[in-house]
Amino acid sequence: DAKTTQPNSMESNEEEPVHLPCNHSTISGTDYIHWYLQLPSQGPEYVIHGLTSNVNNRMASLAIAEDRKSSTLILHRATLRDAAVYYCILRARAGGTSYGKLTFGQGTILTVHP
Amino acid sequence: DTAVSQTPKYLVTQMGNDKSIKCEQNLGHDTMYWYKQDSKKFLKIMFSYNNKELIINETVPNRFSPKSPDKAHLNLHINSLELGDSAVYFCASSLGTGAYGYTFGSGTRLTVV
Image 1 (cartoon, each protein chain N blue to C red):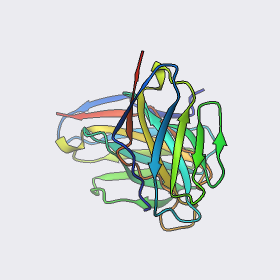
Image 2: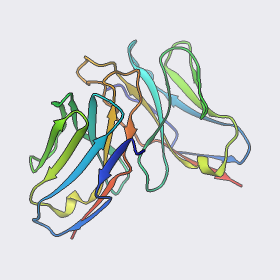
Image 3: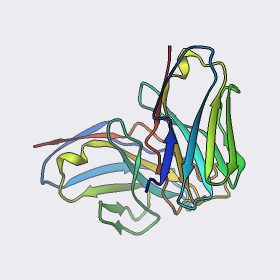
């Protein structure tokens, strides 16, 4: 399984943008980049995913480097509710030996200060 | 309308007992998963079923047996429970392709005493 590397923790102030980096230098051409967050005592929650182009949704934006070896999850205005563990995961397309499973790493613990 | 629902939410049981956790999804997904999150918070995949067929079986003791009666349900049965089985178990579902996200349930906290 292709691996990702994220900082253990990051801090932000409320109302400021947050850029969460992820390195995935061994990404293959058919791997999708997925981001999930996990709030305390809850299940992981899908945030966003992309393949090559930058993506925007109501929760966040995903910026993907041109060589796809890194990506950044952007929260445009952090709120206290955004404090969570954020996971960057590569998901292979179905049909490969990984069967498209998500393999979680340690993630980034985001702390948001009021 | 809960998309992925697990029951029970909490389960406290004695060592040696057998217990089951049920999972149901109403999203029309074709693939379902069981994940285990231990005290160190690492999430590890245990099993995956695609259209009722087992496709992923990670290194899990054979005391754990998943069952999928149809593609909307994936249950987890655990025999002879041990202290080390204490964890939070998450069910998830997805379409079986990298282009789709997973939807997770809210988890079942299993405590073996």
